[in-house]
Length: 218
Image 1 (spheres, rainbow, N blue to C red):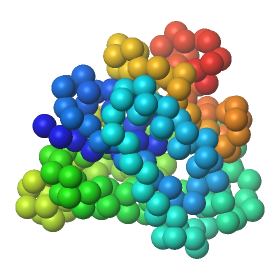
Image 2: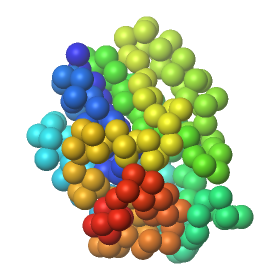
Image 3: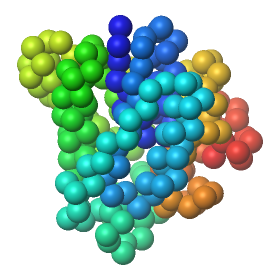
Image 4: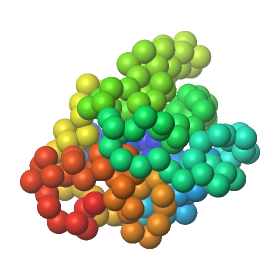
């Protein structure tokens, strides 16, 4: 069985990669350059994880598609990433227009080209609800059905965490001895995580919920 894993280098996607390998699947990890301001650090983490597991790793450049994005993650913009717990933010500015829809559509095409049967996508539940439309239950159901139709049922979208929270994902990865210290989740993109953006806060809470207090993990 051959699978593609959409690998950002963060907690969720890296855990998907570890799970696919634990299932004895042949894996190709796909990372996306989309003009993200934190791309250098994020993609380095993806490379580090892929190298650790010795899997085929491809980086696909889709940055031209997102040149006009109004998100604070677009390096063409001079916007400060919104800070604080997602549940407390009134004006979250980190959404990239239909990002996961674009990514998964590209992944479906690549899966057919590489004769892969599965696409692993790390969307999960969030304590504050569906922050982004393209991580919602409705989106997952719809894109899964679309890819099934468009690939003549040759490619399955696997979302092992769609009913799990980030702390559950971390728990799974810890059982698989995933080297989370190699992963990266900050949207600011510095050498060290900012600790103040929503994704940094979510990451820290997930590790603390699993009894991990060592700051090298967050």
